[in-house]
Image 1 (cartoon, rainbow, N blue to C red):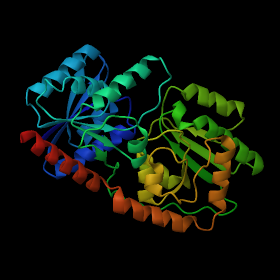
Image 2 (cartoon, rainbow, N blue to C red):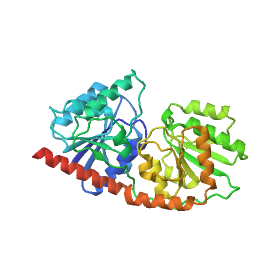
Image 3 (spheres, one colour):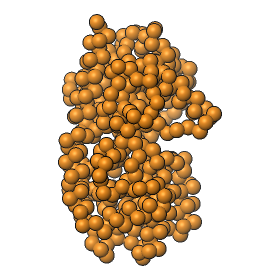
Image 4 (cartoon, rainbow, N blue to C red):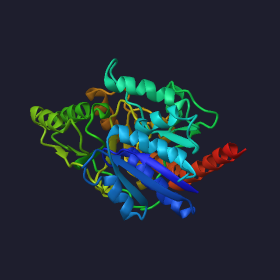
Length: 362
């Protein structure tokens, strides 16, 4: 089965990392995935393209205008180059959905996440058209139950929830739990964007260090448009205990070097860094955004109740003072291996692909 995965990547974040994991597993299962990576004319090689090559995944680099990208999508939808097209973004959902009467190749779209756009902005209108186009696509995949229930998207009869997954390896030794007097090392991972709520997390670290003699060190791994503003915020807070690492391919190592991961997001799909933490046995403190409760469970004890600095600080204090955190970490690891491996994810996608192709052939 030949599958074309269409993506216009802005970095190596959740959707990209999920796609690499999925293609690796699809190759093991004797499928033939190709990542078709779009970009602007003359745009340099993207991180996802490098990762595809590194993992022996076939990748086609397309550099073109938006109109040319639409025409490219329409062409592969009609010429039978692939058995199935898998879209990873609105730029492909829209032309492939609207061209449903004309195309021959079935289309699956994974909705990785939706950050609500401000009303009457260009992105707001894109999202309106995208939701309509998704209602015309053969199958729509949500990465969490929460996403499926809350997004007002017309869904085909093959739509379902397929959780993100990552490989079972590398398995690593869980970081040692800090003593009462140890420096408390906190990691945050993600785009430096508004929805990640890093500004409140930085203020929370300042609050904790005022209370507790600079014991808390925060490392933020990621790039984004708020980079300079967040650095300035840390400076304004006189917070030298915040380290801006930039984008890192070594999240696994960072998880082992820190005592816990904090996810302060206001919106999420199903974060890959969350799954990595569950797999590795790293403690997790998180908001209930998106599919996070699907992964951790509704009764997880270290949720951030509100995405405010005070609430984040309180959740971090509760985590480090808890006598149950080692048992909670172990339960999270078991949940990962039962439900969130890339092998399980790939198996569910393949089942959906086969069902879709069977129905189209009848």
